[in-house]
Image 1 (cartoon, rainbow, N blue to C red):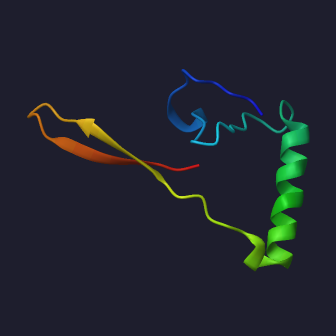
Image 2: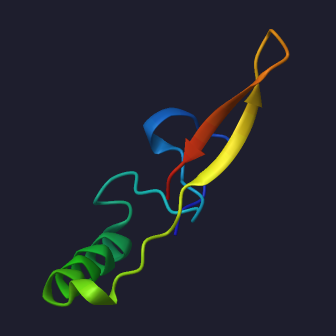
Amino acid sequence: MINYPYQKGPHTPGIDNISLTSRKEDEDLYINLVQWLKDIIKNPKSYKVIPVKRVWIPKSNGKLRPLGIPS
């Protein structure tokens, strides 16, 4: 698991703090992810969805805007 708390954009980890940067750097994590996906495909009822984290962001007019942070 690689955690980059101050990165922005597509490399920002989700609420589970997992971020893959490239296959060479995270080869073990990549292999585990592929194996996990194979297991889920074989038995899809074993997968439980992680809900999106809802955060309210203040707008310039004082109101709040919803933001969903996926895993």
